[in-house]
Image (cartoon, rainbow, N blue to C red):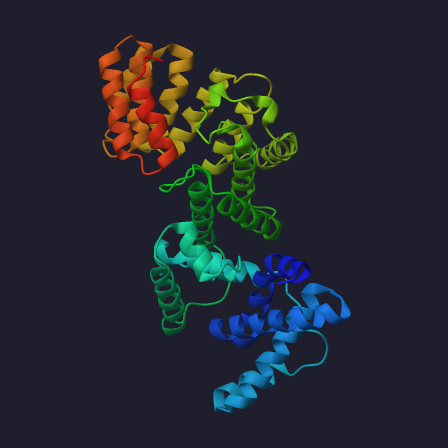
Amino acid sequence: MSDPVEEAFREQYGRAVAVLVRLLGDIDLAEEAVQEAFAAAVEHWARNGPPSPAGWIITTARNRAVDRLRREAKREDRHREAALLFPGEAREEPPDRLRLIFTCCHPALSTAAQVPLTLRLLGGLSTTEIAHALLVPEATVAQRIVRAKQKIRDAGIPYRVPSGSQLPDRLQAVLAVIYLIFNEGYAASSGPRLIRDDLCTEAIRLGRLLHELLPGEPEATGLLALMLLTEARRAARTGSGGEQVLLRDQDRSRWDGGLIAEGHRLVRQCLDHGHPGPYQLQAAINAVHTDGPSTDWPQVLRLYDQLLHLSPTPVVALNRAVAVAEVAGPAAALDLVEALDLPRYHVFHVVRGDLLRRLGREPEAREAFRRAADLAGNDVQRSYLQARSSSER
């Protein structure tokens, strides 16, 4: 694709699909019409220059859908054709993409289906790109997307934003899917790279979209702030050879000041609501890490106390123990870590190894790092941990 078309594709694909799904009530037909519109844009824009991309793509996709329905000439298709034949330009209604996000993340669909479907319909990623991003076979991704669409159709999953008491629980699923995409980009579960830039970028784009559509939802704001503040440290997280660099050893001058400022502003905005949730508190913790030349660990510990109260999970308790080590010393933290049951989580062994090393218990520390290296799926993390298991620092 030419640059204007490629740029429009990334920015407008999800918007156009959302509009056509509303008009057609058919995800597959909506996707086909939008893809045909972008194919037409390659030729048309090369001759005449790019018009207003969103309006042109949506209107062209609508016209392509009408042509397709006329060719198929079934009764139900004629009804949909009639619905599309209205005067004026087809435009996005504010809730269109929001409806599509909630459809992709409906609880009737598994997480394994929600993630690729969201990347496909809202992000416009191809099956090949999604397979590469998730490190699963392309055929598996294609099968998951097809089955998800079938389930939406066969189960009559509504294309709408849930209202009233349903919204908080359903919103959590949407937030979790976006955060899962970001986490896989931030610390890849396997493969040769520590960071997958494309996944981080796509998750942040979806987070911005959700924040734009739900500006009054503090957890949506908190998730965006959390991703921005984490993304701000990307350049300093690896060394010149691609090796992992821990937070305490990172060159803070390489952090992105613009993203940090935006993230801090969003943290203040969402905490002003007075109802802190897990994403808001994680964002606040990252705001403390990125505020000034060093971390205020007592403040981090206080925030982890709140987070553990809201989300009493072993992983949160493990992260809190890291803060305890900085405030009360490694011995106090090790007692907390030893009480956790996370034998298959490589970060558990990393934290334990670090605390043991700080306490001078070197043989135990090396064994912990060896165990962490065995469990790490990412090549960069594994190499880093193998080096720590054979050194005394």
